[in-house]
Length: 319
Image (cartoon, rainbow, N blue to C red):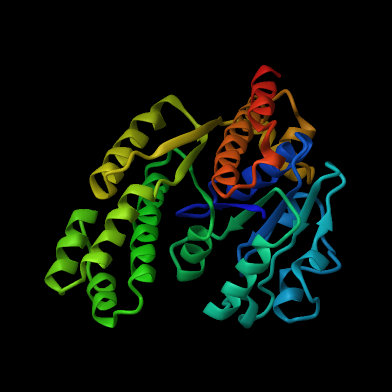
């Protein structure tokens, strides 16, 4: 069964799709079977980054039931033999705003894809679509830049994702849902107190405790700079105060004008400029991400396809 890696951002323009395109390519070149799924409903552009302007089928084809499975909608990417793309949707109001049942159908089929890793490129913002797709990931990654507004939007996104997960866990109790969705909370501890006041059962409070311990998204700092590091530490402190969990940095990608040049050439920077500072940093992020995927696969009992994953990470670091 595929490991789902959800990649999101609090705001647009931070380079999330560019990062996904490069990570997918790098992991596929390391021997993983990788699918990149563009779930940015309404503003899908992952296919454009590979110069794919006329895909034969897409997520929209699946949503309209023009194809029977997502496998039938995958497009091979020439840059890496084991890399495939599920192009996005959004050319109609219905596909740009899928209902809950449609989202669940999409996620079920994504997990059943014949792949080692499925990278979910999720649209920016904090709508229910973005939060639900993000929370579906076995490994959850948030992309931001050092810009103060981008960092604060990343903080809000993670905070609301935690709240959305709680509301979903307690969805059977309408009273609890209202108590959670209509208020802002300074910490998970405040959420727990509010639920106690609403008469939550012991097992429901235990779910909140489990969430606080298990919810640990990773962060990639794109277009990194020394000055931006200070701003990130402030956000890291805020999230620790809210969730009591430390936000882990998966990697940092420096500002590099060659990334923009590669986008104009419809190629990942790892292909167009493999020796660039951004490409080398992304290679390191890909190695770290493979390790995270290996842990998740091992936890589910799927150990065989990932036996060499740590060795591959060492190879990436050495290159």
